[in-house]
Length: 65
Length: 255
Image (cartoon, rainbow over all chains, first blue to last red; front, side, top):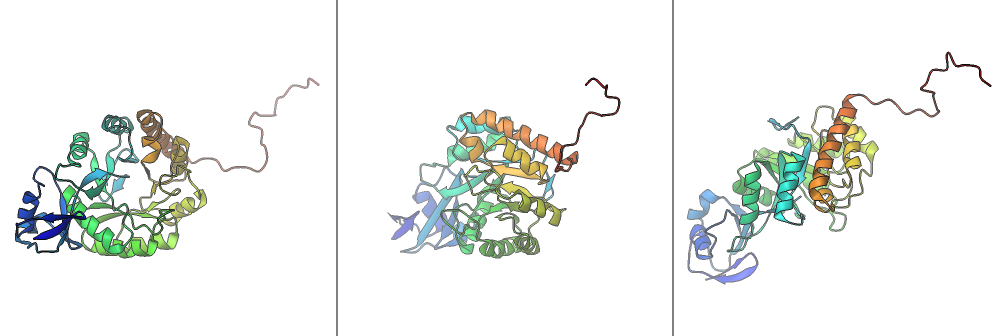
């Protein structure tokens, strides 16, 4: 299925958010996630389904003022 | 000084953006002696663009104050705050709801609404606000225990554009920690803010964009200490006319 990851179209086969993050390569870094505009806590990623057309945001610590 | 039950001894909160190199960031943090640094959340790549920065920060032992910089709506700010808590394991959030893209002026209406939502959800909110007293009251009613009025627009380095408003805030909120956030350009600006009685200063660009960020970080902390000491020492009131400081009594008649 196709989903949007940080505004880029990606093809994945995983059907949960935690599996999708691994498939997309987010394995080494600490990230926070939102699916279709709603925050998804780390503890809920295993049971959060990902569907075709979803919009996933993956955020990391960055410089800020 | 206590910020949400956390004791802070250095009254400078330092931003982490725009430094010429990771080394200068680390050295500036050390030179400033600050205990709190601000960070943001941005889109990550699978290669881990944020990982190196995160490692640097963790080595500093500073407390992390994540921000919602760039958020223009309540829902954006609330979601970003939730993501920050998940990522950084802290209830602290520097809440920015920006109302205007050019001035980066806070949308105080959205700010109060977002603060209410986040405080009810257990966040400890540091709201980036104007020096308006009524907005400050609304933020305290929403559950904030700290107020962060701007000194001047973000990144402008203009110094305090309305010192009287900050003085009024100090008088109106005698027991609320006040942190001047944004607009500081020089150590004298930070010193002036502290002399007015605010409790701390949050700045970033003034250090990061200085010719010598490490030297400027050190200078800012020295200025903040001097300003605080001056405030506590109760400065004299200005006078309209000259008043001789040397006694006239006992002067010789030489003319």
